[in-house]
Image: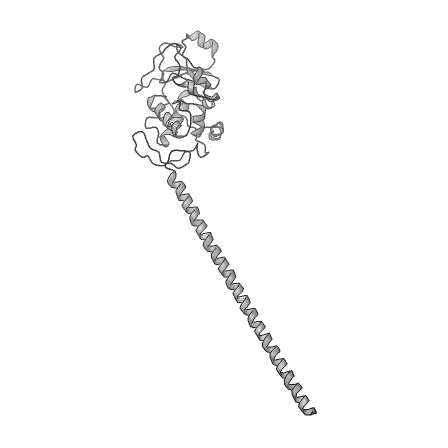
Length: 272
């Protein structure tokens, strides 16, 4: 009887050890399987994230392309394709003003003689700028208030210390603008435009106009000669540019237009 009990105990102990080892082996396999499953799950998550990132990037490119495709539409932007009055597409160019850039100020040598290709305006006492009453804001008050006056040489000299001969006509400087000095010298009364010209950094009117002409030319608006004269072609180009850029359509050289073209006091100082 004693022998039977001993044998039974040995068998039970052996079965217990075998069961424990099997459980341990199963636990190890389960752990490995769990780790493998977790790794696969993590890879799956990263893979999904990668695809999602790819889709996001593609959407970003699509948005960028959409912006580029819309850049041909008139409005603010940098690289744009303009359409001239005749409907002809012009090459895309850089718009320094709208993109926040600065235009380089250049100096031109012009002869102080009238441009025979441009007809001079005729003096009319108290002549005013048509439509200026509709231009609102401090930058346009001078245009609204302007009216032509005729005085002799002595009167102009007594009232304005800075008077210059530009392109066959005399201009006087007052409060940041150049104006025709009608009558200063009766033999030199050639004016392509009877109105104020914004005196950017005090440059003479022909230099201001010439720099604006070159920028308008670079951007496909102006197709004439850079001559420093505010003639019909230049004024038409200014009007088109102003209309495209949401500016008041003055067809004249004013401060907002010059700033939009990239001319600021800082850009003048930087150019030396």
